[in-house]
Length: 476
Image 1 (spheres, rainbow, N blue to C red):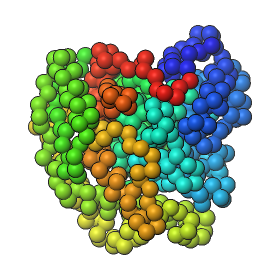
Image 2 (cartoon, helix red, strand yellow):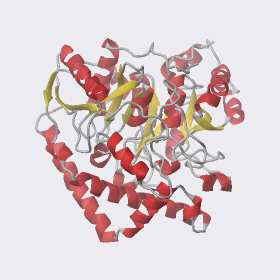
Image 3 (spheres, rainbow, N blue to C red):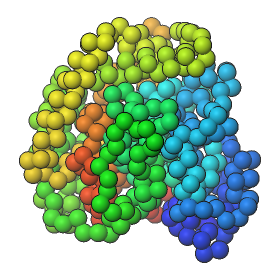
Image 4 (cartoon, rainbow, N blue to C red):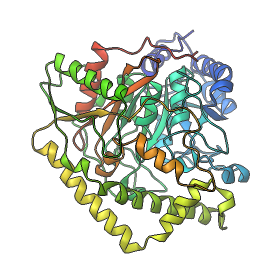
């Protein structure tokens, strides 16, 4: 039988070679979920019966034929399956989606077998996965710690060995943050690299994108090959890659000029995170790259936060209105968490012109940030987040202080949301662990459309400083 720690590429090869059947892979994943999930609370909706049916026929087409996979319970939905987006309201309605999104259908076409749906904070708002409706997901490296968010359920499942890869999405860091806190590879692709259709063209002014969290760079690359590209009717698309992303794994990135940024305008960056980034810088230098203390000056602009929050809060107000329209009723304060309602109220307080003014500011900001790459830099290196995985409970937002979690989030994530605004690809790599045994990610940011170079360098770092043999406290 397959080793739980084989990546998706290796598991798919076992199926192709006839060494295992899809049904055996799926049964093994279900067994791991049943054993580990009571402690971690990563999977909130098992899809075991349909998974066994999908795998039971034997051969499954696609590059990942027969490989078990989890969908994050947010945005990307699958036909006939529940979707709650972390909301007690949708759970109470027993909400079930009627069709696959474009992305879900591409995961299926790639051969993945959906074995369940993973936990997420309500509407994906927070960088921790502690929804009141489903309870906290616990970090397999230390179960009193957060997994990050909003793809924390997916990250905990992959990090613990339940499945080799899982769906994730990112509107302000929600792929990269859990990747950092759970010791995984997390690539936020270029804006519109993957489709949000058929419901949506873009979301929140283009902030939101989707991909996966994995344990290997080659999985991240090959899955992007399988699911990338525009869907029918998408309003715009990312620049087409020159060749398959899987072909970038092992390719020579050449001699690169890389900037290093370890300070934040929002507060102190924990020494462990500074050390992780500087250690990564030294590793890059040992590989022949030039690393300089440099970053785009607009990243220090204090006006960024206010304009981002305008876009973010309006987006959350729109999101609640979307569900109002779906159910033809008004979702009220009692239906959602205090932070959600506070953000929705904030979003509804902005006028249309105020929203467009914030969007205009952020688009101008994007041009200024990306000029740094145009002026000769290849990559930017930062800590992924500003501190090690926080203890659970720090993002609570009680009714008498409903924005507490949002302010706490700002201190944690000074390096991720900027690149949702600019649309640039960024990857978190699990290159460091601190003295407490907690994973600390390093983030590399490429130019718009530049996933190819990120994958080349990520694979180069993985080869010289591998992480595949590390195991968390709770694991298969």
